[in-house]
Length: 543
Image 1 (cartoon, rainbow, N blue to C red):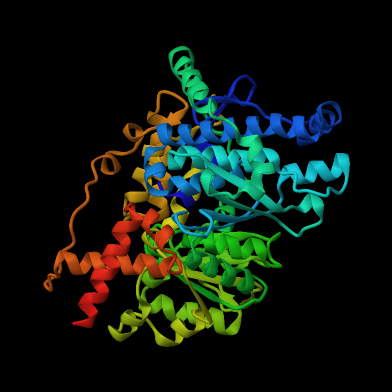
Image 2: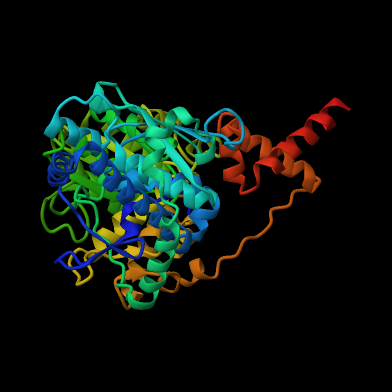
């Protein structure tokens, strides 16, 4: 799992009915920010600024150091890929700080090790609320947390110092970090709070005791409250840019009456997209009726769509309203429209052009007020070229086309969708807060999903049925997911391994905006190694 996929629901373990809460395997507490702010005020009034800051600095440092250690032990993959960034991500997930803007170096030169801006820091907010505007920066616990976390990461003492703070009227809180010995004597008034030479040994001793005495609770997950019963809400959760663009088009299309052709592979959710468009349209309160055109013969499909009168054919013992009429004021969804026979295509085209239908066995036209949405997993342009589909019907249906991308092209959407389906299938079970283990989430992310969203939905339902506790692990997943293996893709034009490595490294460097420290972290190589390779590439280019 990558850092961007880190989700608070995989980090927390708790019983929704109450009891112990665990964060990264250790007991955590949910405390009201106002109460903490009130305690902070009392500490300052009782102990003075020096005493209160000294107390809160030690609290924050211990919390940061322990958090880094827990990520290191419980999430080794994330630690290996992005250990220096995971702390700020976790603190953002737990609501203590908002967005971060970090610049990192190796800390050996004159530039700081880390230069960071924080938004929505609870500590500055509470200071303003309880004590008013300050003359000095006040995010003591948060800067100490960052110091403790980074000290664990670097294996030597790192100190963060805040020079801008919302509590003293600045737009954002700004901090910089250096190795402790690199701060000059002019910062001694800040460094005095970090005389923590014995803190590391105390923390290590405490951890040894905790490892021997604490029992780990089974991890459970509480699904986000905003998930709705309506499955079309899964589109709103899209993270991938390609799907977000598709949903944006669907939002706009919903506001007009145009006929829409929804294309995409089998299982991508074309009917859900049609329902989404209907729900967001002015017709949302009226019927949404779907018919699978490929599942019916031409005769049955004609009767199903247009209706029939009594005696029009054998078995027609009474008049029947067709779906075009039944969907009056609403939306008719023609699924697998590419399967419609040539004869039926003519009748369908007439209904769309004239906005009227004739029941089977009747000459009287009946006006219709219905919006038509159609879907296909075929390439209708190829079907037209092959003489299987009418071009005029194609253009009538395809006033607007929405292509739903396959799940393999929407990697960022896999976990949000999986969590959505998990919420659906566990809502009325004893494990209403079920979650995925990190290994199970990784397995979901590495699978190619040839069956798209439908296959993912079925896989989650299978896992919920198979699990014997309140957490989905790899062994609970369907066999094809558990036994998947990485297969090398080799083309006819085989390239040297060194050339592939060079292109990959340079591609990562471009992706992170030429930030070499971040690139080295993402590549899981040392900064010196990255510089050496870049120098080699420059030499090769000069030849």
